[in-house]
Image (cartoon, rainbow, N blue to C red; front, side, top):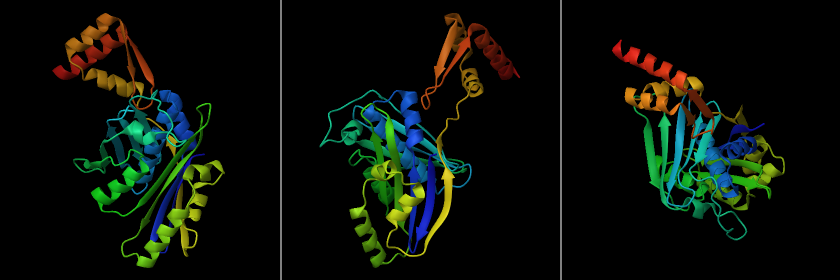
Length: 292
């Protein structure tokens, strides 16, 4: 089962995650090709890692608005381990670059934004330019530029020849405030020799084992928590009815004339069909509420 591990060692903290199943679920729901699976999987995994330091009921949105052929890529993640996401053009494919999926080219250049919903009156959004489109590099730069947090983000999605998600996961490693130069030097050495995170997941390593491999050579390693994570969407038929009820009366009447309407959730691909009779009931209820 997909899961996320939080661990510390000396002056370092690590969040590591295995996300193979949830990335595969998103790819199936959105009918993603290999390139879109890799890009969306990285963004969703990154969002979960960013959300790992949120409090209960808090959530965030990571958005890559690039000019590449994949278009916009968005992921929502919450503190309880739920994530959902979509890519604008899931069928996009490009030639390989040095034998690897051309995620950076697919994303292109543009703007990366992270919006945190923490219960305050207004959400807080930070932004930075997309540097490479490779997702992990851009999230690393975002943390340093927008949140002044030195970090290293590693993300990986391994897509099989038949298009299935074989392995996916990621990590964030951060020195704590006041970390010594020796600690920073050891981190650089560790990261330089670290194998790809998708290879670790493919070899069967759990999130705890990935964290341990990253923290190899450090003392006082403590696992703080392990949390199940999964693809989950907040959409439902009742929420869709609420959205329809906010339409103008003439717009709802026009939908009634069409006989039925199908509403599709961007985040999960779930479709909700409403008949003429159901649309009439929604319009009458909405009209009554407005008059009341």
